[in-house]
Amino acid sequence: MLSFLKPLFAGAPRLDPAEAVRLVTSGAAILADVREADELRAGKAKGALHLPLSMLARTSDPKSGHFERKLQAALSSGKPVILYCASGARSGRAAGMLRAQGFAEVHNLGSLQDWAAGGGAVQR
Image (cartoon, rainbow, N blue to C red; front, top):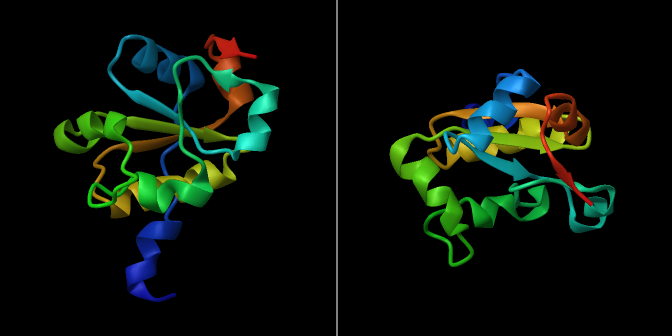
């Protein structure tokens, strides 16, 4: 594999669901859902940013006019970003993309079900 592509495909450390819920509810971490819009019918973690993987390259790039400003705290201070999707595969890829954009600490929670299993609230 070409070395400059390696960070995009590197896995992210998995985080215990209860620990993820604790970090997010205390304000110590940012939670992001990287599923596509049509998948949100199944629910979304309460308080999660919706950053579809298909648009993440733009929404996570501070030089882009589409940069998600709520990510600024994570970028400037190293605040952890916790990602989830339907199974954990896309959130793993998304973690590599965020690291390539300069985000220091990125974790893969896995799925929305993992969030709920850790005690996190789900909005329907």
